[in-house]
Length: 147
Image 1: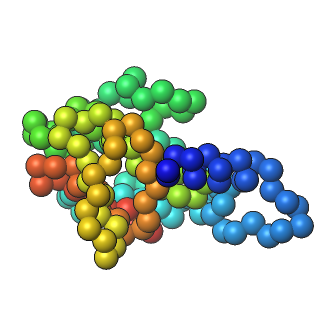
Image 2: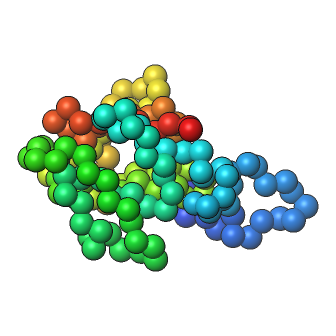
Image 3: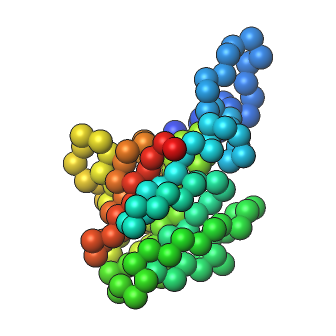
């Protein structure tokens, strides 16, 4: 289960062995360089840096997501009923982009490079690689990119 893998990696990151080198990006907070290079390419071609949490949807409500930081709303598909008001959470955790479908009406699919589309399970955080396309439905998609 991916959620268990993320918890294991977080535990390992919190108690590093000082004698072992830490790989680049591991343990990076959203403000550190490893995380600053990750972004979303939006449908209009613009680039949205993934710093902290992003919440995507046609009218994203930041009160819907709980946590220690306030997510930044990103409007995708305004007026399109195929996109939920608050559809998807995107964040960098431990140097990895993690996406979570927020119980959207029509679901979210991820397409990793060279792979078939996979439907996200609602509320289950899922790590994704750079160049992964995230399909929100209704012809709206974003792509994880390195800046």
